Length: 112
Image (cartoon, rainbow, N blue to C red; front, top):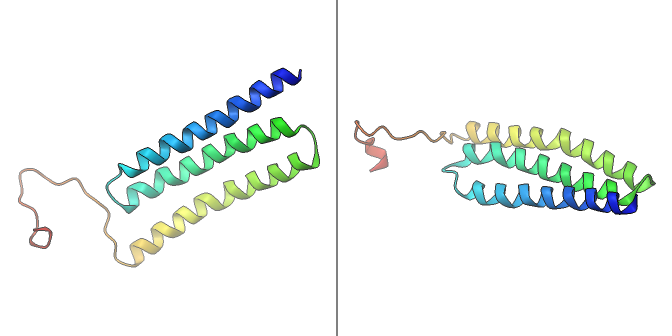
């Protein structure tokens, strides 16, 4: 039984690390702030949930597991809220979302 818990724990830990690593690399490829905030919130939440799930499987039914579940709940509540607040602050400061340039029309004067 211990071997199965160790395997499940390591699969969750490696899976969470994989999502965070690949998401971070993909995040660098996004063109602007707004297209980066959406995957950043998803990557953070999913990767951290898998890692915390692996830690819960590793720790067993202890007080540590309860604390990890509370951290996970806090993360699920705060990560999307923080992402939304950052996007709203960027819009309020005048940052414009990126748009794919139209090939038929020349770029506006301010972009030249």
